[in-house]
Image (cartoon, rainbow, N blue to C red; front, side):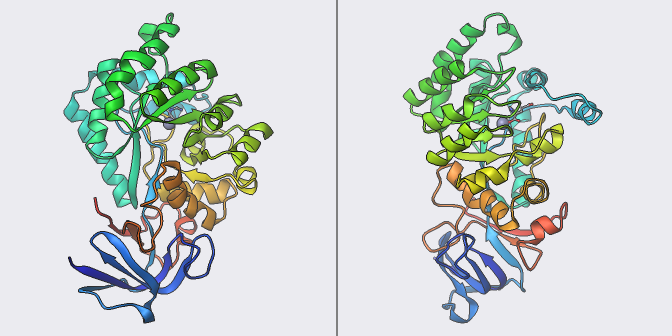
Length: 386
Ligand SMILES: N=CN[C@@H](CCC(=O)O)C(=O)O
Ligand SMILES: [Zn+2]
């Protein structure tokens, strides 16, 4: 197997505090990295680098772990640009907009859905995302949820069953029946295609009892829970996620003291989605309170046609730094190691021996440029096994 030595790395972010400056990012200056069979074999200062079969000089570029996007809805048809425009003129976001995408998704054939997913996955990769999660949730029938997951599973192992996204129109007056469908036949059809089970537990979607029913059924079927909660208002969803040992609770735009205490005492990652606050003109979550309480915080794109139609993690980092009180170092950690924690992945998000060689090369001397140069396509190259 060929070994490759990357050197001339101006700044290498490892996310391993044992490396370099000893910070959480483990930054090594004037660094080198050796890849062997898709794995990191060595990292350190360039002058100590071992010989390898091939050599690539990165001319002073910064190298970071590939971004890990732990929250995305990429299997859908159509878009909701008009809804976005109306919001920018003051119309508030409501969960009901999801139904528009459900109609278009049900009408689309498999090839159209696969093409749309591939397009967004390509955007993500060009922007430095090497691992992404993908939810169903725009099919909302046994047949359409299962096919959404089948399409997603072709491109990522991180597939999430989100039959409980909203109650579809045909069940509007029969929501109990819909919850039974999701927790029964729909789950049975979807579980073999998914790793995760998720519920949108918020105003206009599902209440905490409904969420518990679906998540507990998912757990019994072998799936691992994650949850949308606290997007549209405060509620018991965040505490439910912690109680059930969910890998992550996502949005957290609204959090109470009890939510923060529960997250700090538990193992559930809080995933913040700055693209949503940006695209829905919502208040920014109190990220500082979560970070200062010692909660593990991830950043994700939530790429979807309704609330956050961006596939750009650098954009999310820039928002997190500019408007949510993250330091640039915290934002980069949350978009890489934090995302990995939210997906319970130990192989990605860290560039140290024993981890996958999933990395992004920046057209910049430092990771600080990700927030300092917003909107600029700074990812020059991506290296990963996929
Ligand atoms: N909040 C729930 N689901 C998506 C939005 C879906 C949509 O509006 O189409 C989200 O994560 O923001
Ligand atoms: Zn979502």
